Image (cartoon, rainbow, N blue to C red):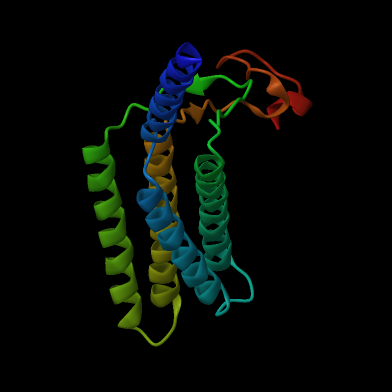
Length: 188
């Protein structure tokens, strides 16, 4: 009977140790909660920005930013749910992957630069009451904010250890090399 209790105690300690290792394998609950809250706030900002437009290039850029943010939010929520349930989430994709070649410091620097450029474009747009110059500044601002969303997604991928998918040509075929004729269908 004494041996049984010793075996149970050893198994309990091993189980607690394994659970601790699982929790330490990724970002903490607080980090994920902060990232989720920030992403939700950025989605709300994008929705607010989109409400001011009925169409055009600026709205397309805002919707692109919103789509990237929603994708990031879904990934973060999935990771958060897996931590709460004590399961390990692995992201399986059959497409070829690029290793994440950017480090956190350069990613943060790129993020700050993109935010600064978007902010500058917004300040420039605020100087004008309308016209082509204002529209071009607003397009640059919307493009900058979409870039910010993409860099933030890349940072989230780095935190979770997810590599980026390799871009593939449409239709799954490689384009003809330069100088080699191609059919009209392949050219498009």
